[in-house]
Image 1 (spheres, one colour):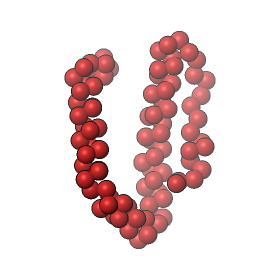
Image 2 (cartoon, rainbow, N blue to C red):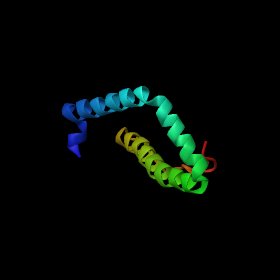
Image 3 (tube, one colour):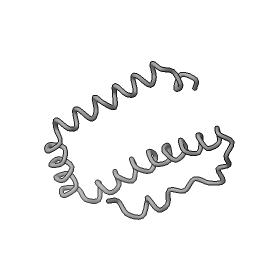
Image 4 (cartoon, rainbow, N blue to C red):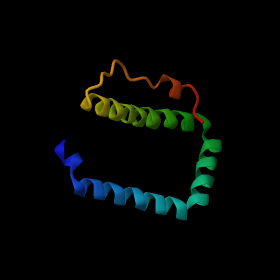
Length: 89
């Protein structure tokens, strides 16, 4: 996992992030319309998809916090994401 700390990985990640933001900003209205239409056409599937995508991403995010805390000598007794799972906004 040392490759994560390399400059090339940081550069590629930053480039991908900037490219994503540019593409999203250029197609913002289309994105919002399509998401709204999908949610209206398939409400149950939209909620299931939300949870199936959000839970793994949230867990990875929280594990990132835990990794940093442990790296700096802290203690991580548990990872909690239950409050985020109550209501998809």
